[in-house]
Image (cartoon, rainbow, N blue to C red):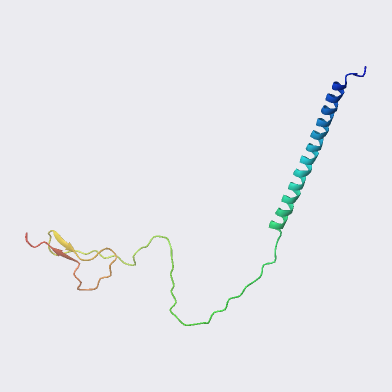
Length: 119
């Protein structure tokens, strides 16, 4: 190949070569920058997840007496120990019911009142 004799062509060739060199340098510096950022990130992750010795701190309190509250929670079905059928000697409309289901009752307690207008 023949050498170009035009000085402007040689200047342009030099500019192109210097641009290519600067691109290579920029690429190397970019790669070095990314590698440095990766190493810093790796060091931070290792520092963050490195197991540390936990310090046990003790708290002391004076002992005092008080009521103890106990609560139990359970699920299931309840069945009565015994079941009693309640009836009346007369028939009629009930005006008022004085107890609800599962209320404890004793002998002689009034459970309901009849409507006495129709009697």
